Image (cartoon, rainbow, N blue to C red; front, top):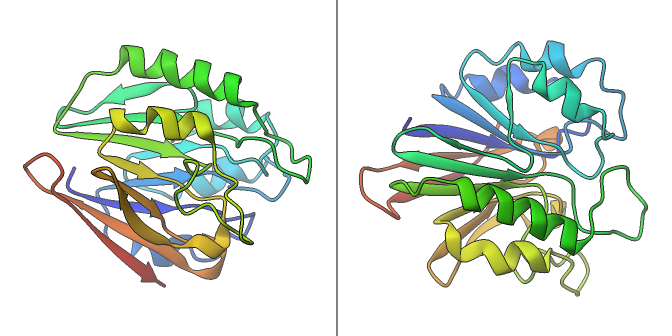
Length: 213
C-alpha cells in the first residue's frame, strides 16, 4: 500500500467522492466529520462507493451512532483501535477534545489518553506508523484564530508515530514537521481539498501532495 488518499471534513457534502477516487489511490483514510451533525443513514451508501480499502474515524461533528454505521460498513472503523498491514500500522482516534460549540462527539483529554494508550499498547511497530486522528495535536496545525486548540493528549503520544493525519481546523490545511513527526491536515473535502500520501520502502520516507479536485 504505497499511495493513500487522505480526506476529511466532508460535512455531508459527498459530491466529490468520485473525483477523489479518480486519483487512483490504493487505499483511503478518512479523518472524521463525514457528516454535519448527522444524519448517518447516507454514510454506508457513500462508503460503498469507495472500491479500495478504507480506514475511518469519526469527527466531532459526527453523531456518536456513526461508530456503529462505520463498523457495519465497507470501511474499517479505527476509533480507539489499531491495525497492522505489514509495512504499515495505523492507530485511530475520533471525535475531538472539547470545543466551545458543544458538538456531538467530544472527549476530554483523559478519555483521549485512555483510548490512545490502549491502542498504542497493542500496536506492532512497522516501517510506517500512522495516527489517523480527527483532532490535531496541540501546537500543530491547530490555530483557527490565534490560539492553539489541539489535543494535549494526542501531542503527548505523537512520538509513537511517523505521520499524524488530522483535520478539524479547516483554516490550517498544510504539512509540518515536529520533532521528526510529519503532521498533515488535507483541508476540507467539502471544498475539494485532499492529500495523496506516498509511502516509500524506508522508515520516514513519506511524501505528501496537497491536491484539489
